[in-house]
Structures are given as structure tokens and as C-alpha cells.
Image (spheres, rainbow, N blue to C red):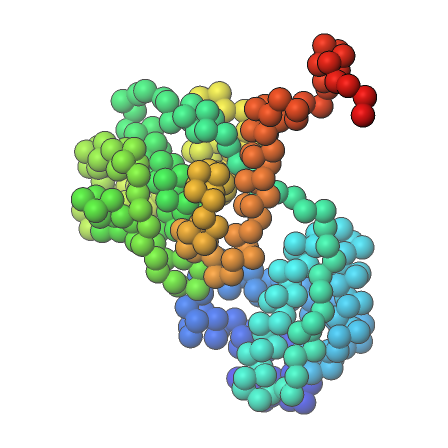
Length: 319
């Protein structure tokens, strides 16, 4: 660390660089996550500079509230601001543990609240349609296995992109993934997904260019399929099968979570399956579950209809 970074003010850029190196090397965060931390901290540092704040030590709760308010006025969502505050809190906790500061100035600074927006998810019939395509095209066989695995096990885009041949135990019906914070977890894989993977493995040799390539899902060039390609292929599959949604891989993960919760009601199990460190992250799916129950109630309960027929009304005595 430079002498300037160790100065009384804890200059912005050197501390950000040091903290991100810590996340990458010691905490083993993914490159994508570290980039997000760096981007958010740089954005905060830029606005702090406009408030004549010279370094991280000079930040206090009042100043950071002013910066967050300004960014909110510029149109940044409450969710994005919450993420930035989380990054800042984590960095200050890092400095606090190393006795570089005496307190965390943003420990209790809340982010502005947006109207709660539920994650999009697909209905069961949409899922069935998505996987209904019958073709011998090797790329479609690959895609069906890829998206069956995401929906079957609730995988993140980064998790499915990193799957290797030895990540899935076909006999046991399990997949081993490395999630956020390099945390590993083993998840069940459904029979439909296992069947789709078996079909793909029989065809995988058609795309192999390097016999040493260990990636489960290969591109036409024989390399590991990129995240961007996975996103594009899912949109193409949705168009071909007539699923009228702006479909993206995380929607399959959301659908997995909401469908499991609708059937089981076990929020803790869903938390474990999704790999959420905090159950509060998983609780958004309770709202989706309630919406499903509300729809069932309105369809099934004889007194739940918004409009009651004239015949029914005529039979009701005044009380």
C-alpha cells in the first residue's frame, strides 16, 4: 500500500484498490463481484469529492446521506443505492477490523425505498412450452440441457456457466456449484434435467475442439459457453417456442424458487437451495407465493368473486 493511502485522510483511490484486492485474493470473490464493488465505491468517491471530502476518514453519516440523496435525485433506484451503501459499509468494516478507523460512519444509514417490485417468474405452462421443442439440432439439445439445469436446481447464470463435466453426479442426481463468496453447495437435479444432460453428453463430442476442455456446456468453437451467449440463446429459445416474455436466465431461477415455495411452503429449504446467506433475501418469494394463493382463492372460493350474481344477492336476507 502506498504511503499516501496510509495518510490521515485515507485517500479514495488507493483504499478502493487495496480493499478490492482483499476481496479478490483473500475472500476469493468472483471477478464480476469485485468489479461491482469497485464501480460502486468509485461512484460514491466521485460525489464525495464534490462535497469537498478529501478521503474516507472525513466521511460522516450526514455527508453520506447527502450523497445518497443526490444520487437518488439523479434517478438511481433504491435497490442500487442499497447496494452502494452495502459496499461502503463492507469497506469500512474492513478498515475498522484493521484499526485504520474508530467507527463505521455508514453503519446505520438507510437507502431510499422504492416501491417493492417482485421478481418476474414464469407459469408452469410457460416452462413446459419452453422445453417442448423437438429437434435433433446439437445446439438446441445443448440449450435444453443447459436451461433444464438452471430451472431444475435454481442456478445463477455465473454458476451454470462454470459447470464442468465433473460438477454433476448423474447417478446421484446432484450438481455441485460454487456460488457467491466462493461458497460451494450441492443441489438436487431433477430427472428431466438428468435426461436432457444425458442427451447432450451423447452429442457434446460434435463440438469438441480441445480434448482437454472440461466445460460441461461448449460453444460452437468448442470453448466454454459464455454468459452472454447463454442469455442470447435463452431469448432465442423463448421466441421459437412462443413464450412471450423478455426471458433471461435469472427468471428461470426466480421461477424455480416460487414454484418450490408454492408446493412446499418451506422458506428455509428455498433459502438453502438458492444459496442465500440471509433469509431476508429469500422472503421476496413469500409475496409471490401469496399472489399464487390469492389467485387460487379467488377462483375457488364461492364468496371470493369481485362481483356477486343477482341471483345470489336475491337470496341473501337483510340482517
